[in-house]
Amino acid sequence: MKLKIAILAGDGIGPEVTEATQKVLRDAKVEIDWEVHHAGLEVVKLTGNPLPPSVVEAVRKNRIALKGPVTTPIGKGFRSVNVTLRQTLDLYANVRPIRSLPNVELRFDVDMVIVRENTEGLYAGLELMIMPGVAQSIKLTTEVASTNIAEFAFRYAAQNGRKRVTIVHKANIMKISDGLALDCARRVGEKHKEIELREMIVDAAAMTMVRDPNRLGVLVTENLYGDILSDLGAGLVGGLGIVPGANIGDSCAVFEAVHGSAPDIAGKGFANPTALIQSAVMMLRHLGENVAAQNIETALTDVYREGNVRTRDLAGTASTDDFAAAISRKLAS
Ligand code: NAI
Image 1 (spheres, protein in one colour):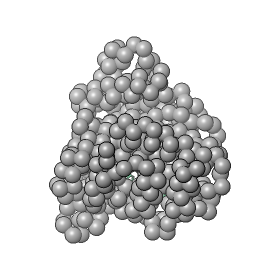
Image 2: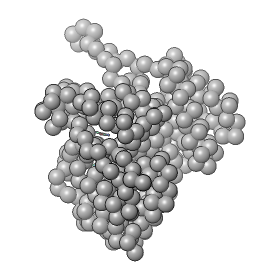
Image 3: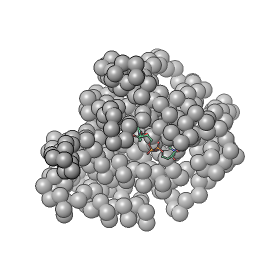
Image 4: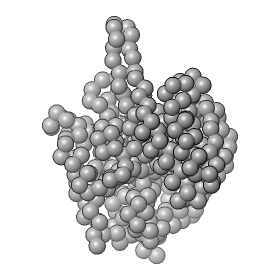
């Protein structure tokens, strides 16, 4: 049966990496009926709204979307499409596996997962100018969201053979908001005795990620810390071109890379599509398409292991299309 999936290519390098990912899915013989939608910069020019309600409804209806990055203006302009989509569809869990690939030179092999609360905290961007020269950001933390994300992290750990969940917080300073999230994680941990719960302050977690990331297992944390630590994680495994992600709710899921629209390299045809291809692998597993997911993952790993075709971010010369074609050749062999 054909899968029905909404696709938002995004902007910047989005269309390039999305096209490469669709090619790989096609060559893996996954039958998909794509429903194409647009959001972001171009859409705001045309409609005045970067995320028209029809796009949100399309994702809700299809329940699954593959998404390229969308640019968010800095310090002015429209609200992030990503934040709006995640909040509106209650995609409360952002899952980002940080895993090394063969032949990418690293200080050590990394295998950890970041589970980021995706709907509240400072990242929700609730802020105001109280008076000239004084701005305030509101860090909203709720028991419901903190409990849901902790439950998700423990469930994920159990389903993926992980023995440890580390709750990352700053409850020594934000005793009330991070203190609430920490208490929720402790309560959830009580119900999952088979999995060890560790607690770590976010600054120590950043240091641990650089020295001994695998100690953390499944790292669960609030929105902004998760945002920052996942780019740190990407740096550990070769950069933003590599790390995939999934925004998961109870009724829909949106799969996208950790990276943004990379305006510095957009339109040049040499962005690394690995992160979005790996996001598509997560999507296939989510849909129970385990054979196709494994085939793509094996083909991608083989391309890295052989090391002849790699994009410029990893000191290679391959274009985005060359890289996708190398995976397709593996799939056909
Ligand atoms: P970025 O992730 O777009 O780029 C950071 C650096 O990594 C750049 O040097 C870029 O060339 C490189 N890079 C990123 N992805 C790459 C890939 N696939 N292959 C090779 N190199 C890659 O982060 P930046 O520059 O901070 O953000 C640009 C825009 O993207 C902003 O408007 C931001 O709001 C947006 N953004 C959107 C996201 C989304 O839609 N999910 C996530 C993160 C940022």
